[in-house]
Each structure stands twice: as structure tokens, then as C-alpha cells.
Amino acid sequence: MNHRNQLLRLAPAALLVLSCVGQAHASTPLAYLTIDGADANGNAMEWRENMSGLISVDASGNIALRQGSTNEIYRNTATDQDFWQWTANANGSGSWNWHTFQTAGAAGDPLAVVSLDKIIGHGDPDLSYGFYAKNNTNSTQTYTLTIGESITPPTYGPTTVYADIGASLTNPSGNLTFAPVSGHIQQFMLSSDGGLSFVNAGVDVGGTFTTSTTGTSSYLAQSQPLSGPTPTNPATEWNFMQLVTRFTLSPNNDIASVSGFASINPVPEPSSYLMMFAGLCLLGGMTARNSGSGRNR
Image 1 (spheres, rainbow, N blue to C red):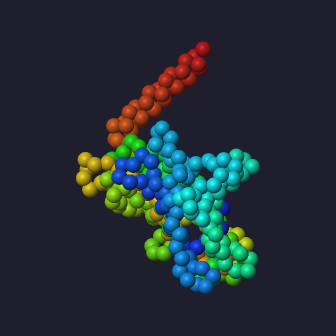
Image 2: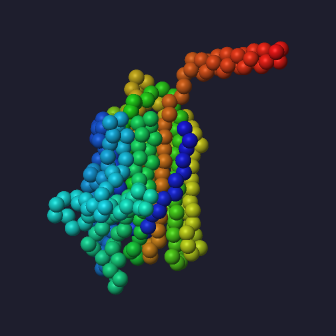
Image 3: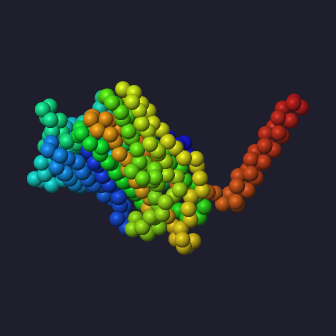
């Protein structure tokens, strides 16, 4: 599998918790957004958005960000003042942009600016995401993004795991800090009970990045392909996986556009390597015979 590092647009935002997690053995993932920030007077505020309607699942169980119609609006509830709106790009893709009625400052900037650019999950399996956030407040904010999907078909025995995270970070002025809340920015987790409990896959990535340079900087962190963990009970299988991304972002319009990726792949059994080796030997012998016959003509 070709491991990809994708850098997506992300603008500064308030304390964000985005959750796209499945229930036990759920074929359809759930999606939630929680934003904790402060109003213009410094009072704590919290938003909770159910984003289940922004995720699509195909017949094979693959998940993706649903493509909306022009300027389509999605609300948490019929009476919710906050909403998501689809914005299409010239190339036919697009993003879901969150709008909150709460604003701050003379310019009337939203307290939180968030765009969801990508959620992709394949049952083979791998996961990737992209989102944009902008911190319009005067204090550091914390963002937590969680996406998850069922592993189809489930996998057991030796595996190889890999993960990476990239970001485009924009600093209008002063200093920008992009940092994990604890440990690493992104964690890759595996479950053998459909997402009820998890173990760490061992490929956590992402450390602190600080810059005083005005403008946009690139950030990239990736793991080496490593041997994955084995379920406690050898008879069980990994049947659910999730990515948890949590970081702090400095205030005053700093921007982070974050993209993450992780995968788990079964390690072929020794018999598979022997069959592959035998096939290569047979192919080599045929090639040698054909070359020899060509010289004798």
C-alpha cells in the first residue's frame, strides 16, 4: 500500500472535539462535533453538533464525506441556530462549513470557524481525514478529532501498522504553536469488540511545532511501518479502528489545516511467501529458457 501524506486547508478555531465513531459492530459510523470556547466576555461556551448526516457508507462498508448539493444546509435539529453548509469547489469536490450565530469583536467574526474537508475509510482497511479550523479568540484552544470505522473483513494474527499526520499552519503575526495536549497529536487505536474498548496500535505521531515566522509553514510527522499489536485472545479479531487527533492551537487568528492517515494490514503467512518465491523461481526459469532458445535460433 502506498502511504499518503495529504496536506489540507485548516483555519484557526475554538476548542474542537470532532467525533466520528461507530457503536459496537456498527456498519454506519456516527459523527459528532463538540466545540468548547469562550464568548466575547470570556465566558465559557460549548457547542455539540451531530454530524451523522454528513457521512455516507457504500455497500462495501467504506465511509466518505457526503457530497452536498449547492449551498445545502444541514442542521443538528430543525430548530438549531448553528448549521453546516456545503461549499463546492471548481473541481467538483467541496467541504462542509460550520456556521455559528455567536460572534465576537467589532468585525463580527464567528467565535469558531470549522470546515470538514474529508473523511475516508476503507474496509481493507485504512482511515484518513482533513479538517480546517481557525482560532478567532484571544486564548489557546484545544481540538480533538476522532474518526472510526469497522474493519471489513476483520483481521487477526500478525499485522503491519502505519500512520502519518500533516498540517498547513498559518501565522498572521506573533507566534504560532501547534502542540499535542499530551504525548502525541495523533493516536491510532484498535478494537476487537466493535469499538467498546481500544488498545493503542503503537504508531502515535506528532510533536510540538512553534514558529514566529509570519505566513504559512508545513508540518509533517510519520511513523515507520511497524508490527501491530495482537488481540489479547488469539481467537479474536480486530474489527474496529479509530484515529484520535488532539492538539492545542495558539490564539489571534492562527490557522491549522490538518490531514491524518493510518492503516493496518495483515502480514502474509510464511506459506504465502514460499508460494510467491516458488512462482518467481518458475518465472525466472521460463525466462532463462526462452532467452536460451532465442540465442540458438
